Image 1 (tube, helix red, strand yellow):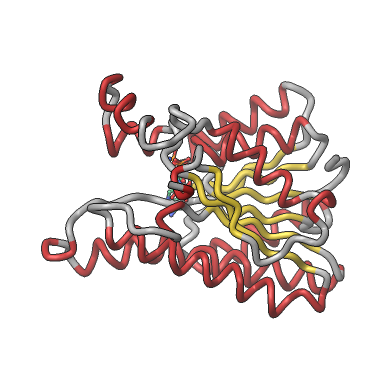
Image 2 (cartoon, rainbow, N blue to C red):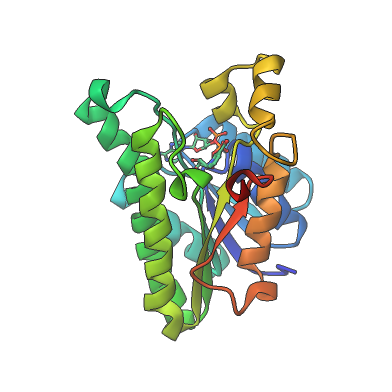
Length: 249
Ligand SMILES: NC(=O)c1ccc[n+]([C@@H]2O[C@H](COP(=O)([O-])OP(=O)(O)OC[C@H]3O[C@@H](n4cnc5c(N)ncnc54)[C@H](O)[C@@H]3O)[C@@H](O)[C@H]2O)c1
């Protein structure tokens, strides 16, 4: 489905981003893996190449404008263009508002929201030139409803939601679509950090989803690939929940 398409995925060394980049590669895309974690990112790209895929690792701190510009330039230099941008890199800080430092707030907003502006800015310039493109932002159910105890994170994801809709509205005339996915709890290293490895706690969290299990990185990757593909050519500005029914309750 993505034969010869050039796909940039941020935060692709781990979790949802890694699985997404892997799925794109399996669908014959040329994949650009961007991550601040140089070791895991480079190892992952070596793995992809070893399996016969075309891939490039660009060490990128998505909070830094020069890095985001360099990321898109490297994709264009190596593969000729950018067809799909998946803004996935993100972090969670669960300090309550009354105890949160300004530095923590800034780090969350820069990583989860400013990053999506910066990477989109440079990818859009390429996509406008090509009169075609798809941006998929990894939002969260917490962009739709307030997840308890993580107010600042929720605020960043609310911002991602509105940035996505705005990109959809402003760039439709260039044949560029922008959508986001809204996962509930997905079993990734981020979740291990926030709720721990305790199986009983995971089971309790899983019960919040009517489907009765946690999501997998593959569940989210499948939704991202749909929104990046021509199968969703009339879908833009959408927020696709991948949440086992969490927000349907
Ligand atoms: N895991 C969940 O339950 C869940 C639920 C909803 C939404 N999300 C969102 O999904 C996305 C991916 O989360 P995940 O669970 O796969 O997390 P993860 O921690 O497994 O992976 C995140 C990746 O982002 C990278 N990263 C962090 N800061 C970066 C920076 N400044 N520049 C470049 N890369 C950076 C990390 O190195 C890591 O490889 C995030 O945006 C997260 O908010 C996750």
